[in-house]
Image (tube, rainbow, N blue to C red; front, top):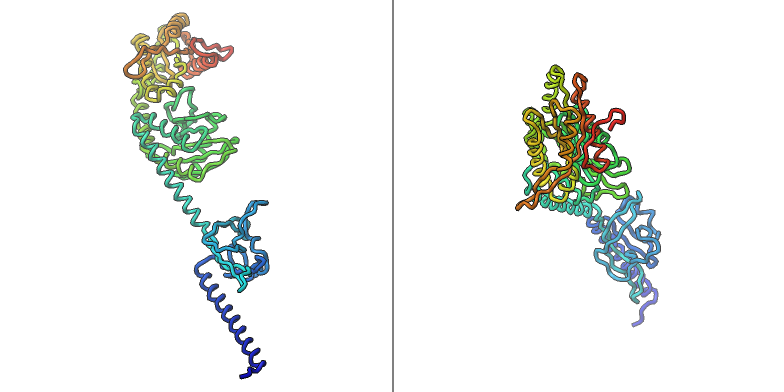
Length: 481
């Protein structure tokens, strides 16, 4: 039977048209399915150019203008580094990770699955595949990882803090551990109470009395005066309602500041710093806020104790007079001394290298040394004299009726003998701690106030400390030291 050639050609054309229609319907079905399941579906030709894209807009790009362009133009990859082009891969890919360039220039983290298209002879004619945007998922995973790390770090810090008893020790341990966990250079805690700012004296954690003050510090000091840091913390706290946490740059350093509200004072601000060259990790501010929240109860307890001590007139650690009660009591004696024609001398005593004791033996050992020093100083003077702890390792002695000669003799003995303290149990041989003594004498009817005498004695003490310590020195009005 002979086949009409015209019929045969017509039949072949029909078969080809049917195949094209089937292929077109297959593409449409695949594109409709991919549109639902993925963020971008694509098909490229043998040269790696887009021939099919869906939906009409993806990653900020209108997709229609991309047809005919090289698909690898969307890829973000280091210049000069050869890497796999998932839009023109001769092998099937499943969830291949890549980075695409969004229309706004930002990067999108994606997973690409694709399959090569080949002709009957096995020649690569294109690639068909789909793209899934996982940027949000990765951000969520990173956020979850940061939260888990923060929780784990806080559990370890809390475990170490539970070993301490005294509020100041607990706060110190927490701040030291936070510096290690965040890689910070240093930090401090500021209590934003109303009143004039109070900068800590050398070796002093937190001077008593109202007004913004440094409650605790750790690490390397920032090369900025305390009153500037205190003022910055107070100003920031006044602009924002606690609790809050923020990062900023100040005087060439990167800072994290976090504030918490307490029931007994204005906000407490925790401030950490590091060099400007190093930025903070995403979880660092959360860790700072978490520690400050953990310390909330301890901070409130510390504030209650300080307020009780302020009203009772006693230093909570040593049992001596505190600064406020010392000033009040001396003020009461001045009129009597003038009436009796007597002089008096103020001695401000600082323990040399006390910071080393704290660093080597721990804050609790340092507190024990302060208690022993307070006891020995109390025994070294007459019952009618006054002894107070001004803050940190600095003490004050008020000697009624003592002129410069009597006070100098007392100071010389004190500097030669030092203060014998014991560290640890079982107690080894007593450790003799050197002292530095700054003196200021009030002649009869000089009308010098106790505040002025304290300033003078502190200036004399500071001069001795700068010279190496272990000596006594009277305030010299001509030189200011």
